[in-house]
Structures are given as structure tokens and as C-alpha cells.
Amino acid sequence: MVRAIRGAITVENNNETDILTATRELLNSIIKENNISKDDVISIIFTATRDLDAVYPAVAARQIGFTDVALMCTNEMYVPGSLEKCIRVMMHVNSDKKNNELKHIYLKGAKILRPDIAK
Image (tube, rainbow, N blue to C red; front, side, top):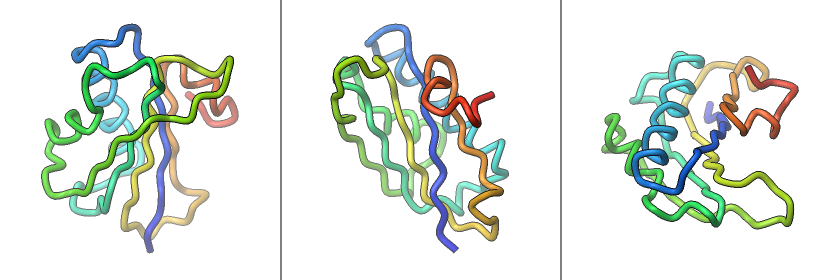
């Protein structure tokens, strides 16, 4: 079955180092918490808030080995008063797990997006 796993993380600054470090942290957490093999990943969609434009978050995925996976970056829709400096991810994976067995990962300031599941 194809499943989608969500996640998000915030960064302190709009620079390449902060964006790539945070994106790697988020991806590695999703992989670890869901016991995902990189071969099970079909695609990853990244969104970033309009205040993040120093680098594409997908670069971080390539850095950790997602070289044969379809990746896409886009802007998150702007809503006045919404969370700033946030990178969101939707990872499509082949998995035998049920939707309620998946662990969606929200880190740092992004925990406020899903307080019901954030660690």
C-alpha cells in the first residue's frame, strides 16, 4: 500500500545551513520513527513558508541518499498570522502499516501544528 507520512520543523534563520540541517533532522526522524527503508520511499514533497528561500529543502534529501526518489519543493500557502520559518514534508512510502500506525513527526516550533501528536 502507498501511505503518506507528514512532518514539519521550524528553523531559526533563513540560511542554507539552518534549512538543510533542520530538513535532514526531520527526514531522519521520520525514517527512524517509522522504520522506513529508503527503497520504500516513492516521493517527497517539501513546502516552505515564504520567508525561507536560501536553499531548496530537497537538497538535504539528496545529501542523505535520496538520489533515486522524486522530490518537489513548493511554497506553503500564506495565511496571515501563521507559523513562520517552517518546512513541511509529505513523504509517500510503500508500507504494510495502517494509517493509524504511522508516526507523523513535528519538531521544534512546528509542534504547535499538531499538538495532538507532537513529541
